[in-house]
Image 1 (cartoon, rainbow, N blue to C red):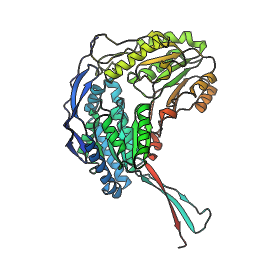
Image 2: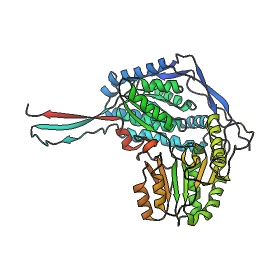
Image 3: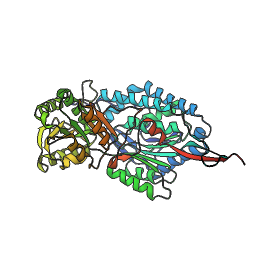
Image 4: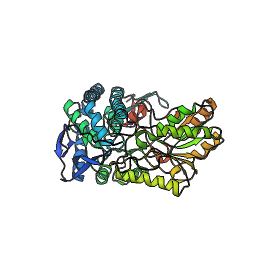
Length: 499
């Protein structure tokens, strides 16, 4: 099968500019970066590369908007609510073009992108509902009858976001919607491989007129731009999604600047799935494959370590192989395509190298896949791959690959054995268990140290439920009230009413 190129729709913004202080401006560096369609490995756009000077301009604009502008000083919570609702409506009205741009820039199947655009719309509407519900507490006199105490919640200030490449629009909504609902102002840097829907989103924000100047700003670029944003002393909080290595660097950087600032990081994972006896094995195999191979495995919470109970292992493995081989790879804009390419050549080569390590160094057996898809085809395609007989300490069992590779560990006999091993993992983002036993569910969900646990399912996330990790998978929470609350700071007010 040949993957065909699809033309990028006409972009309603100038790629040579970025969005700062309510207007499109030229990047001061004069440098540019090519943006690819990973399905065919071809350049589809050339965008500007922001400089440290541009980052400073964006942060200064956000700082002025927060401390001197109307967004927090004059707008009511209800007005902020209406602004977010206007943005949700704009996304909905322009969704067709957003979907096509996102699919071409990321290589995602168009059916998956539709769900992600649905999520973005839902997220802005969901968090709009919190904007007029910022609440404190009244604490009655505890030690002195003449004192009244109460708390108020205030926005943390300017938030600098550094986004990952794998869910450009959806993760933007995860971060920006709750921050704006809380009354913060934002400087947003998308992943350098996938900036186009962020730029389009900025254009929609501009057209709606929903936000005052400086409330939402965009900078484009790679490491230097991200570092300038993290280091800027006028940034009050940093939100980061990406690798463990970079996340640790971000944490160190925010602690070593002139002013310590709040940080929230959503990092990597090596999420386990556990198959117990008594479940529908065919359905479970399909869920496991979906949990691993969704978005070509480029999910921080991907199910990439699989434990199968010894009593069902031999029956389950052929079903797992069949489920992986049934996935449809093809042109991402075709309705029937279920899996797309990896994001770029570096990720493509990384994943193929891990498959080699699994087979040659870790001693794993190749159940299916194992190489580039449609050899000689342009683009960054890797077959859905399953390695079996993987040792518990093997590199492919313990290191994040970020590709369509599932490591099936040696069979197990006791759920307690699995839990004991997994509790020693460096990661703690997600896990899943497939079982009909309530006692299994209780033991697993109570003892596992991870932020999200799926029972008889995988990958479903909702705007009203928090998402985040333990240990090297990060701290802070996206989604849910917990995310909104993360952009608020608490003040305690003590009033001597006898004065």
